[in-house]
Image 1 (tube, each protein chain N blue to C red):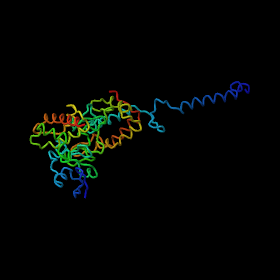
Image 2 (image 1 turned 180 degrees about the vertical axis):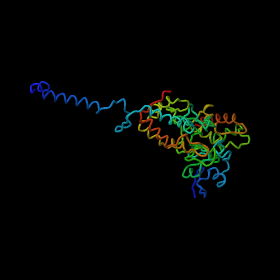
Image 3 (image 1 turned 45 degrees about the vertical axis):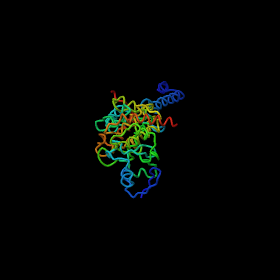
Image 4 (image 1 turned 90 degrees about the vertical axis):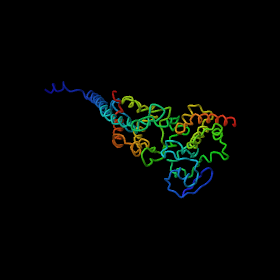
Length: 211
Length: 154
């Protein structure tokens, strides 16, 4: 029996080598993740992608960005839109190179630093403008798929990184969409809900819906 | 008390900082060349220059003008001889005249930024100034004439 037991035991050196190999395989399986399954927000922050959660959140983002309060200043042409029916802005101001208007119709000539009391007064913000002519960031006419892809691409989103994109939810001119003066309904969800959906969309992979 | 610089003169006024600049000019300072047309930045009759830009004084709070340079139609030129004013007279542009101060103040910004405007440039600059009498064709001609005068003067 002593002889049989000795037949089925490995030499010590072999056992040690096998143990090391197995440890390496186990470590590689659990110590490193598949890089395609994560998204890097900053150098220190990564999150795991979830395409279903991302697309679901984007549909909330989409309905905000396509509401008049946002879309009116992201027109497909060079004149902003106006009103809840997004008609072309009366008096036909033009975008201009920097998005701030031209000649006697620069945006801030009429749009004051703050809102004014009363209906049909121009809404206000200290830096009222459209996107510049070399990066128009058009929302009007975009499908969810098109808009999502445009928003995450630095070449079409104002050179923003993912981190800057997340921060953009708190940009002053974005937030003013929820406070544009009397007679201008806010977007369909609150800013807090929009910000949550925005971050959820980005941090779960910034996926574009199928259509 | 607010101190304003209007047409290179200093004025001190005791008004609410939220009072539209238009009413400070007209009611407090007697500068009635600037007109009230709509009160909501839709017609351009109230255009004045704030640091050279043609703001609509009916919606611009006077507080925004404190410490800035304001020019009204009265101060566009010292002797009434701005090229636009001369062209306006030469081509007999005004009918009732009510919108014309705003028209000229807007056109002045155009000519400062573009010495040889095309008709499209004029459209872009002037579409916000409404004329109930329909003097648009003469306004366009006068802007072209003023631009030519300005170029010749150098």
